Length: 297
Image (tube, rainbow, N blue to C red; front, side):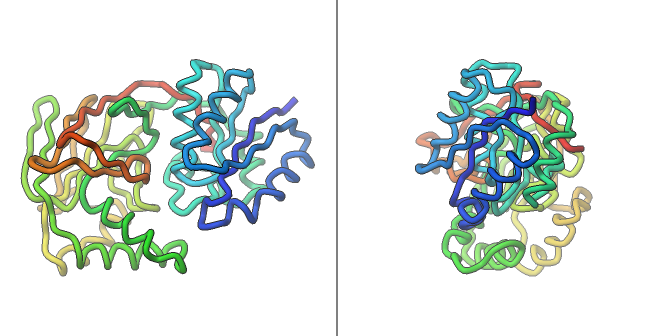
């Protein structure tokens, strides 16, 4: 019997979740699944729902939404202690970086078929300040892009990201960012630092294209401050993941990283969700194989 506890975020994809909620339930049932379906009503509710579903013994918790929905559901599963419960993804959000990582299609029926035929894989998670993350933690330009996206309610998809990136750059003032890891220390004005489990961030930018989500290591990308025209010239390289050799770019791997903005409270994105920390630095560590994930690829 195919069984799943399904969590739908109706605000995902700027309302796409609400529009697809009925179809998601119908396709699951038409294909012979036993499901329990829940739509979230408040931010963060997916965490409590996923924890409850895992504790109740559901073998698969499906997060239907974007990276934020995946983030909450993953934290709920880990908090439950139910190590045999897997996380499945229907990537119907805006960015869908984690869905891209596990090969989850965005179309509903294809996504559910992928869940039926997928393989469960133990994946690493990152941990910071009492919270886990599945895909990445970023400081710098990423957070400015998220702020601009919130100001562009009429746009979706690649157009949303393109406009948000350009507007963010016009307003961005590169902070001093410090990073410390084993045998690696750097500090200075930077566009961004991404500490990643996955390969893409920001809706498909291949900041860490060689990342392996099951190797017990973060892949870290640091891009030092550059001018506007240099930045615009480099963006296609970052999208393709061919930026590692560029002069302002530093790439390395580490199991633990200390990241901060000296003299300023730290503002970061955590799986694409903004976080504001009271301190100016945080410690991140990899938790190897912490989450079972239903992967299509």
